[in-house]
Image (cartoon, rainbow, N blue to C red):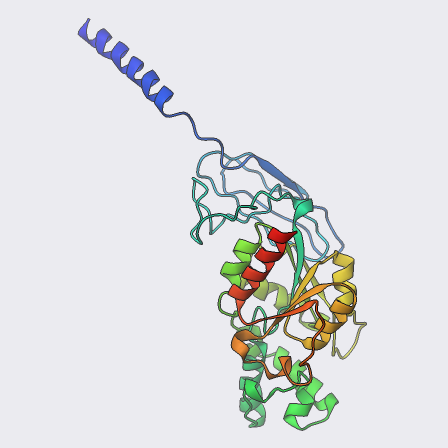
Length: 317
């Protein structure tokens, strides 16, 4: 009798506690779809052991603290995320982020997000520093970033354009390039925050010859952050090239983040805003001969500046 009374009291207490502590809403109730393209297949798998992998689609309906991994999306594969937030590193079960309070516009739907194109070299990674190490060791020619008043290597190295192209393509085959380029400080953490209200894509002038190494590098240092990755194939030994303005227009990009004033001016002439990235005011090629820039070009000196400027534009739109 006492045991029966105790059981009844415990059940009553359980009901009372449930009424005081209503169940938390599910952390995720979303789905995304991937369309195949010619060169890449979209493959994704949720963190939950009940989720299934598929090469074409994946439905996610996870509850509680389960975190869902968003895949790296390459070239023209399109991903439809309800709010586009990559929560792998940034979100706790209660929706708080390790980077601070969520932005007030983090609920922006995919179609309302700002489309932003991001360059790689000198914006995401320190290409010139790695190249200088290779040139010093291979050709006994020492240079510093401060010497590059133009981003044309043959002028800095005092050699022909063809010779410079040969040296750069030799650099591509070495560990100096394949594992010696380090991320620009602040880039990854800022891009994680920007992904809340921006569609981020890579637009690089890099050559098709180094596409695979580039994709691996992005996947290693910026996993899951970019919707598309486009190669301009500039300064290539073979193959056609595309201008950054052309690529940005095809993406519907409203903003380009780039360190090259020439690309910045080309895009500004097409009505695209540009954040001209001059890291800690240390890129000479951002300054020489480009004192008067178009109104659509805004200089920034680090990734904190990038975040502030994009946030300001979104809030004022």
